[in-house]
Image (cartoon, rainbow, N blue to C red):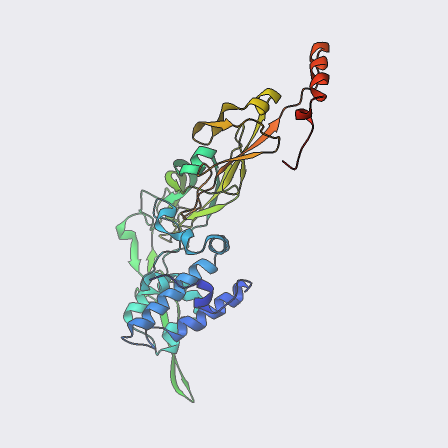
Length: 375
């Protein structure tokens, strides 16, 4: 079953602002929320579908990639190390990542406090790490065939001493006394409609459910340290200069167990010594002599993956274009492939000897050397 367009899922246009996208997601999510539709699998799938759409459209980099390549930009073949963003989400992911869209835990207040599972799901774990951006150079052959790159990235990584929780040892972590480990505090107020319950993030533990009594020395309680990581990046064939790809969870590690940011990869296309790129096609300027143009010849030309021999027929004119099918670049996540275009230029000598001048003047009188463009 093909995926629906993300803009259609949220009921917005491509020109919608970030606030409009957020507002529309909130409306759709409230409509299909599991508490409002208990036992309704179709509503649950629509709830997940809306969250996947919002995950992409609320992120400027992911949105730009989606606008350009659609769902293909987030297919499993689009990257390694966990893949690029845009995949399926489970309910815990949704409640933990996008609960802030609903203000003061509207899941609890609107639906009468919700269930225990949702209270735990909405608990935050530390602070999310920031995204990282890197530039990745690729030559024509790597772009045409796709490539795996091993890149060493300097960034915040999880502290190996405390495992990311920021505590000195396991005895230095205790359940928050304010919220009793739930990460939330509830308040019941009486209104003319009856009792209304609101659920807010615990101010003592900031929603983590635990407090640290003694901080880890190496990371000073942050749960992360500055280091480096070698990341394996699978680049699909056909990428272009300036294109941005993202790898979910490969950015800076979060504080105190918070989720990691994304790694944004910008493609830099290295120039080829003799080929030029034109979309999916590759072009090459071939210069031949006047005798070769008159008599014809066979000649080797460079291609992305080696050399190819082409035949120049007798009487070839300057400006003739020969085409090598399938010798260009592939479509990103597609099945099409470009060609190599060979632009023929007949080289005109800029200096001639007296003998050569006499020969040319004699040939100029021949009818065969008179231009006949109609033929």
